[in-house]
Each structure stands twice: as C-alpha cells, then as structure tokens.
Image 1 (tube, rainbow, N blue to C red):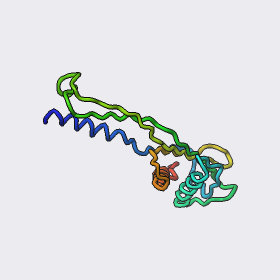
Image 2 (cartoon, rainbow, N blue to C red):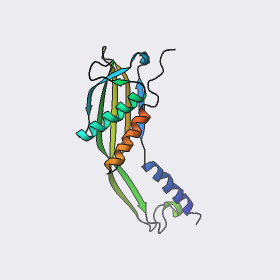
Image 3 (cartoon, rainbow, N blue to C red):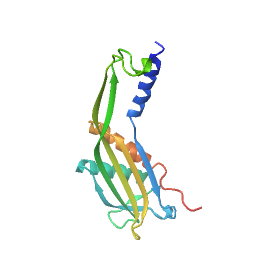
Image 4 (tube, helix red, strand yellow):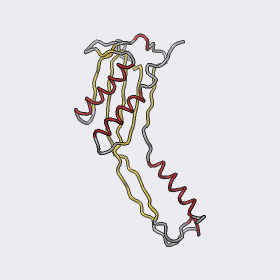
Length: 176
C-alpha cells in the first residue's frame, strides 16, 4: 500500500492542474489621470453573437457605473471597446488502470495500462480597452480568460465574475 501513495498524490496534483481556472490581468497608462474621466461611450463590442455582445456590454457597463462612470450615447470622455472570442484548447488526460507494476514500483514496464484521451475544452477570452476620447490613447486594458461550460447561464455568471475581477482595482491610482 505504501507504493500507491505517490501515485495517488501524483494523480491528485495533476488533476489540480487540469483546471487552469480564470486568468485576469490588467494594465494601464501610469501617466493618465483617471480622476478626470466620468463619462464613457462605446466604440464597439464584438463577440460570437448578439446575445454575448449584449451580455458583455451589460457586464462592463455595470462595473463602470459602480465606479461612478456614466454612459453617454456619444461624446464620452473615455471610449470603451470590448472583444470576446471562444477557442478550443486541447487537454490531455491520462488514466491508469492501477493494475500491474508500473514505473513507480518496478522501473518501467509492468502489466498496468494507461489510456490517454484528448479533450477539446472551450475557453472564452475577453479584452476590454478604454481610450481617451480626445487623444485616442489607450488608457487601460483588461484581459480575462475562462474555461466555458455548455450552459449559457453558467457562462454568463462566469462573465460577470471575470469582469468584476477585471475592474476590481479600477480606476487605478495614479499620480501622487
């Protein structure tokens, strides 16, 4: 039984890495004075379909409103664009039948079998850019990437959570 402990630990650790989870990052112009921006207008929102375009617009708009920014139909001090995309990421999963030797116990060889399968995992990515409307300079960029499910309602909740994380420290503290 003592020989199976490393195998169990390895399977647990490798399983933990299979779910990469959400990745959120942001960057911004360190010379921008975010205190001067109070309104925004949309440049564009692109996604796989109109349903997701509306969901992205609503999620980003809710976060900006929570930060005190108001949407202007046109002529806002800042301009916002968002691009959403989905791609398939391949994931390898290897399962061991647990029978026979195996390299953990007796070197390479043995009578156990391993089966590896390839699974295509949908991953959604969202990029949100905020520009100064007059100078057209990029002020802030947020990126979020998340494994998607087959359930649109779950994915919408994931979108709201990731956009919330994206805007957690918005507007950035700049200047003194």
